[in-house]
Length: 80
Figure 1 (tube, rainbow, N blue to C red):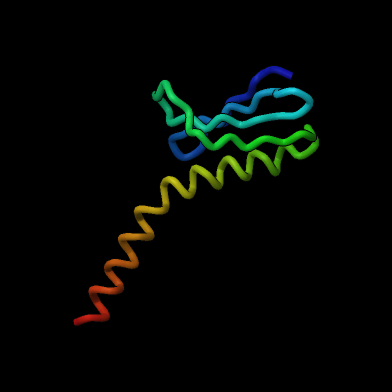
Figure 2: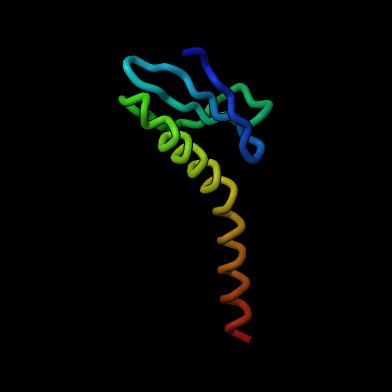
């Protein structure tokens, strides 16, 4: 199995064979470095689950500052 690249929300998910399973490297498009989180599956049949986990990492990276801003706004509004 060759490497596969899935583009998701400005990141590239590199799905690669690793030992007897698969791993997903999460790289910001245009970056030379990947994220330290590497979803790994020992079973190639769990490919979709591993991709969902990699997408979850990207979602967390992108959504965390947004959610923090919403919480801060709610706190400010409740103090008025």
